[in-house]
Image 1: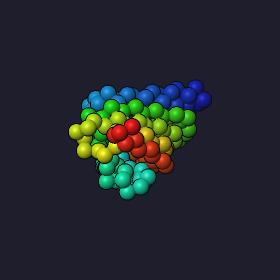
Image 2: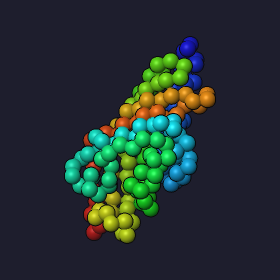
Image 3: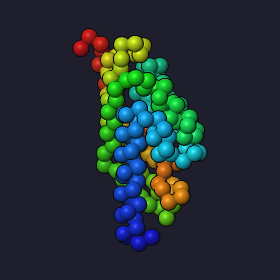
Image 4: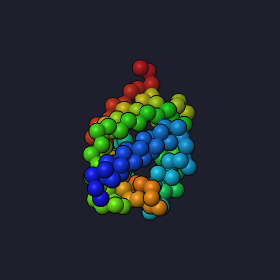
Length: 158
């Protein structure tokens, strides 16, 4: 790959991550799943910021496959209002069809009273570590590992 092809690939991967966040926040589960390879590994085993995240947000595990990843996300956030922001992408193109990337993340989740979540809001900070694969000329996420480093919980009475 020449430099221009690498820059185009980086741009396409940045747009892929934008579509990922937008589909997640819009609760468009078909569009969300379309960002992934069929064999994606969706790894949230290191997103722990304490026992309350594991018990309350149900983020501490791994799912395999695009449909399973979308279903997991749908179940995890339910009807909550969400805002996901990915920043400072560090993307490395390995060859014509594979790449890796690291993204800084800030996510905010406003839960509904009927969600059963004991907090009104969760604001998290962390990183995504990802592998990308080009499938039929389109970049897809083949593996994503989310590591949340810190979370702030806002009680319902605030």
